[in-house]
Image (cartoon, rainbow over all chains, first blue to last red):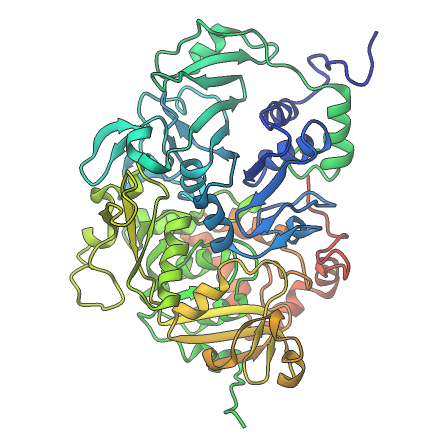
Length: 272
Length: 325
């Protein structure tokens, strides 16, 4: 018999709702979560209203554990501060991040490679004369460097899942050690401040994770209606699909109710 | 009696010289000193070197108008209302703009160093990224790190190891930010210059303290004796402030905690119309050059729109403006 906690059927939910739910399920209760604008806000707010009510959210503009009455449109939004524990500024929250208090972070990216190196800076051409200039790093690499776990949420396309990204904005499991530029493991690059790294990539087609030994990405689950073959056709490197566990769990009716009617009734990120 | 720091917007902008290194209050599309930015375009400021923890709509306007030669930051865009800085991208490709990429932590540490009067500070953030790639040192590549400008450091980064605790892994040293001018938009300033910010302070304290000259635009100028009744609520002492300007709505279309919302519709319109230089020029003609003052600009925005953006006094943001799809 169906009830509010039954899984919704394909066609009853939108992709963005599935992604928000997949994100929410990465959060453990009581964790300190650093979240960026957009889908991460949906994911963390949903988790707080379901499985992780004691999770605290830090937004990089300077608010700590706000309990917004209305969904913020950006991390600088006054809405982030509603019933916050503390509201201050960047030096404070990034200092806490560097100090090691952040358990989990949600981030985005335009391109990713098999080690989880992410690009949000330039695509195509060369660095000084790129085909496409993006926003630049923001706090992405800082948060990804210094949190214990990072989850990336991205669009799945072959041109975005590359053997090598055009510019490493945010560090994965194998990185270049500067100023020399030799490839090293993330553990080696970060030394005493190594705390972990990217643990999942949630895309429009699937969820990926990283091998603990090699740092290489593998397919964990495919979204309902997507095949393993579809995913392989949309990845630009040789992808390990041998560990695929099946389908990503769809949202429940209760989660859809929360997303649509409680968290984002204005359609800020869910759309109309 | 302290000297009178009150200025008009026009007079305040005359304190900014061509070629100056400039920074701002705020965060992306929040609490940016837009009234001053528009007047900088009208006064045709040139060769500015923007150094910012992050940039946003204000940076895009100055860059589109050809006021800027260098942008040092970690980010430029319009958040939900425009996904990239299209003017910066265009001017970068045409060679008119030099963009130097740092990360958010790198930039806030640079400003903290500037604010504390030390030449650099250490951080562990963003190791293993191309931000640290010596080939991607834009100011160095353009020959600007030769020491001739004392505000531009000779190196983008320095790599060291921890001499105190023997921690493993590189420590990055980032050079101080030392701007000529910080232009801030805040909620309140006292008649002598004491600054009060409501809501998130972003990186305002570091930006203001790192600069040699500070221009503060406030929603309200209030009696100094009143703002001093609760000094723990104040951010900046009066003696660090050189000029004060009273301009209600002066951060529009960016948002101001407790006063008004981001005007997302206005910013989205700017983003969609200014992807080309012709588009930018037409937009600037309509909203900046044909408009003689910020008051005239507010008339053009219209009372109804401003009223919808006005913050609810309990929530500190507007609950009436339509934000979503």
